[in-house]
Length: 329
Image 1 (cartoon, rainbow, N blue to C red):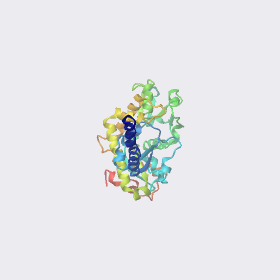
Image 2 (cartoon, rainbow, N blue to C red; image 1 turned 45 degrees about the horizontal axis):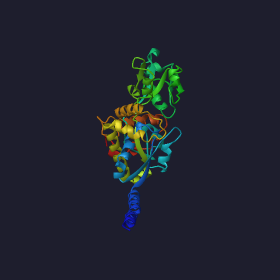
Image 3 (cartoon, one colour; image 1 turned 90 degrees about the horizontal axis):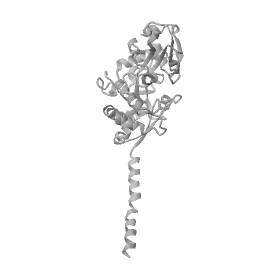
Image 4 (tube, rainbow, N blue to C red; image 1 turned 180 degrees about the vertical axis):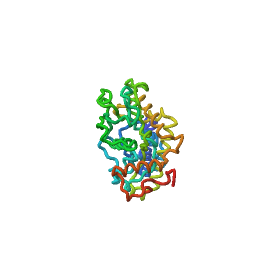
């Protein structure tokens, strides 16, 4: 008889544990504040710090249940965040200017956005002054304004350059249909290297050399959400920065964390690791505490945003960002 009742008794003891454990897990989840982070582009190591923060439990430690959603061409996270549909987003600072006053920059992760212009050396193009009379391609997703700023800084008229809409590949450049193409330092420039274009083959023109450097990826939220939830904003940013600190220290592990999110299997480990290494250079953590908002760079960005009608003159500069992260008060 014992052989019959002992297993039944053991099973009986185990029965109450399952709902109890489930109830505890549900309780832990309900204590977390759910928020959404909408990226400005597709999954890649450009956003490694956020995935690391979630994987390592930094957001949970801060009391947050963070859902990270990819962006894509045509998905406007500036609209969804400014309207309160989603709590947080990432975007270049210049691209936030159309909603100046309605959004708040909480932290600037990349001090430089990484936009470069490349030309084959045999074209003889060495600086923006050599763009005159040439075909220059750029993505018309906001990047064109940095090209305009380069031309303006050099005293050149836009009409002096043939500006072409660039596709989301390098075919126009490779086939010689354009003389100059836009290339992100952490993406297209690496693709060109894989295609066999080395330093001896390419001239690389940095907008910074023309005084047209724009800061890159930043964390933002709506002004309404910030004013109602300043502590949640602080916790989210602090946890995100912890994620970036870890990604900078352990880029290979951070790359693997991103790859685990790639359910479609479209990403290459080597490509993504190379991308992260170059993104880290743009963060400049050796010079700035991660997340610091360089107000001088911000002022330069606002100058061009006003020039191109993106920024309303009646919006105070200080209202654009969270002063706790600014380098100058």
